[in-house]
Image 1 (cartoon, rainbow, N blue to C red):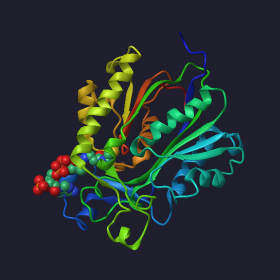
Image 2: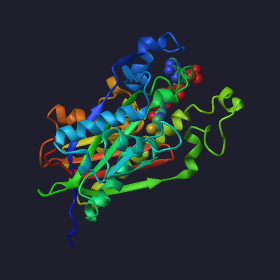
Image 3: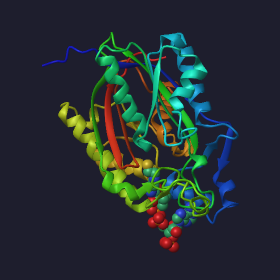
Length: 333
Ligand code: COA
């Protein structure tokens, strides 16, 4: 039976990338690596670095851009959701800082932590408040300042990450567009594969924790790589199948940008043609919760998103977490 609930559709998309570029050549001066190795093993040529400002700076720029694009006022926003693993501080939530900085006096606001799956998790969460009729306008932002938690001397991670933010405005669809379906997963038994141990209640910040670098992100690169390819393809195909669709029906597949080889292997398993897949990892790198909305925003600017298009967003990240959202594109600004 068809649902009578309104679908949440994306009515505006925005991104923010800091100005400073950190190239592979720059990294060659800090760690034992090469431009050639990084390009070949990851597809990344450069990443952006935010100097002197916290994550909320980027998230606020995105929020202001969403209001401008949609032509609405901060008081029209009911809820602000920020997906991040690099909040400005443990307390308060970065979403509250954004709420204050844009003057969204009627909005409630909270952060959501699902690492690289954060934006897809937050999108699906925010959409529920639109579908239920509780809210008219929900802002969903993915923002991470990865340079704040990346060990500049760890060559297995410092080459992968960058800083950036993106976001969308969700409203009830009037044109049949919007979130069709989603499938989300978590498996906390993979907690050791990708983590930032220090600074929480398990390992509160001490001189020792900082000396040991527990405040930096660490990962089992090969394990995460294999997991990402398997799970991204699996969840994407499963979601398509239960909606009686195939990969060939997709106009655009927007995957989390972790590694070009992960994206290519996922697309290959799904049987997607390269024109169906959005990639921008070469110049943006992995911005964690920022990747999917930044890619969506670039795709829109490049004319790759048209009303009526079938779009799939899929991500995997620490937790471990993974999930996919299927949408009919509307008329987003
Ligand atoms: N430059 C040069 N050599 C490097 C290097 C670098 N930046 N990083 C690792 N190496 C070396 C390793 O030390 C290893 O050398 P050895 O064979 O002498 O031991 C060799 O390259 C191969 O290492 P390996 O870890 O097998 O490389 P890889 O092809 O798996 O690539 C990653 C490493 C990290 C790029 C890759 O595993 C990856 O992208 N994993 C997923 C990580 C991720 O996406 N995390 C976020 C998830 S959302």
